[in-house]
Image 1 (tube, rainbow, N blue to C red):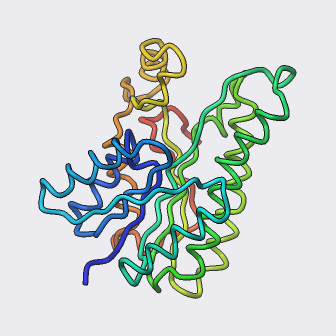
Image 2 (image 1 turned 90 degrees about the horizontal axis):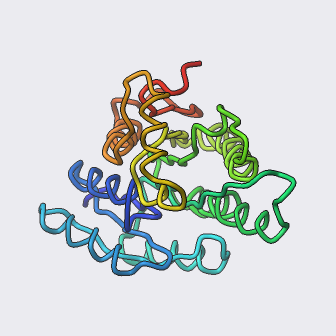
Length: 244
């Protein structure tokens, strides 16, 4: 039986690239999506075209019943979960003084509460030797003006991720964070995408904007046996935009 990987936000961008890469690595992939069934179906088709196995599953990660229902469906369909990639998230730009509590609740509801619930349910069923990767952002290090809410939501996620790595260590389950730099995904379309890509290339030591496949390759390595001794870490995949 193939190992099973579930990837949230897998209808586009980093999520799609990760789903494809894990399929190439031999995983059966649960392509999890929130609203875009069309995008998820496209990802499933791309995986089946290369000889992989994939199914689409709808989940609203900010809703507890939806998350619990997803995990019931995964176990019913596959009988196991070996890898969880928590990629789904939303961006936000605005000065702290202008942030409404509705915006606060929405961003934290998806980025923090949603990822927390996904991790909580995965911790109950993930196979020994499995792996969880939560996607954060280089914004938690750069502390750029206008990114207060987004940064805070991801910092909270980074905090519980590291604790979870300690809690699941006895089961030989790895729990890590990947923090992408500026990456050419649909998330950039919320702003001036071309300017953002140019900025990303300027601040990166390798002088280019990231591609979804760059992030997917790093995730693939982290969940593999080659990284069996790595857990509780935050890997910045950003071409050298952040060098600590």
